[in-house]
Image (cartoon, rainbow, N blue to C red):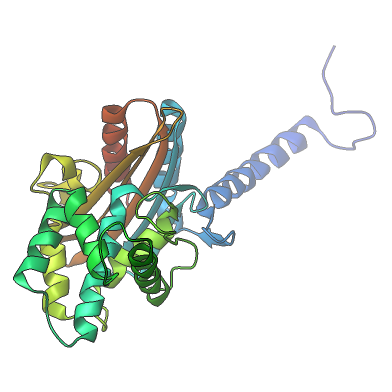
Length: 302
C-alpha cells in the first residue's frame, strides 16, 4: 500500500516534508532563545548574547553531570557585556564576604580622609590572600568600633557592612549579626568586583589597588575557581593580572557551598566574575568543579 497524507489534509508527502524542514530552524531558534534567557537574582529575565549560548549549554551539562547547582555572573568591562547563568540560585556567602568586609574598611578610611594603616593592610592581606578568619573578624570588629564578641559591636559592624552593600546597589545580600553565613547571589557578588575594578569614587584609588593586589592567588586555597586562570590565556591573550577570593562552607547535610569571585586582565580586556555552587558532596571535587565552570566560561566565550 502506498502511504499518503492524512485524509482531509489536502497535503502531499512532498509538501509535508517541505513544511517539516522549514519548521526545524524555527524550533532550533526557539531552543536557542530559551537558553539565552536567564533568570536574575530579583526574578527578572536577562538575555545573554547569542554568541555565548555555548557557555550555557556547557554549564548545564557540567551541572547535570555533577548533580550540583551552579550560578555564574560575568562581566566584560570593555564590551559592556553581562553574562548570567541561573542568577536566581543562592548560596551561603562563606569567605567571599571577606572582599566586601575589606571594602568596608577602605570606605571608612576614605570617609576619614586617610589611607589604610600598615596594621590594616596586614589584616587585609591575611584575610584575602590566606583567608585568615581571625584577621577578618578583627577587621569586622574595627569598623564596629567596639570590643570583640560584644553584641553591640556586631550590630554596628553589620550595619557598616550592609551600608557598603547598599552603596554598591546590592539589593538582596545582607549580613545579619555575623559574617559569611548569610545568603548571597552571583549578581550581587559581581557588583562588588566590578566596583573594585572600576575604582568606585568612595574608596581611595591606592587602597583599591592594594585590595586587588592582596587578592592575587599566592596561597593554594586561592588557586582554584577564578584562580585556575593563572598562567592561562583568554581569547589568545595572556592573563596578566588576576585577583581571586574563594570561599567554602558545609551544610549540616554534608553538602558544600563553594564559591569563587575575582577579576582578570588579558590583553586590553578586563573581566569580573562571580561563581556560586552548592550541592557538592566532596570538598575537593567542589573546588575542581568551580575551576571547570570558570574554565568553561572562557573556553566558550563568543
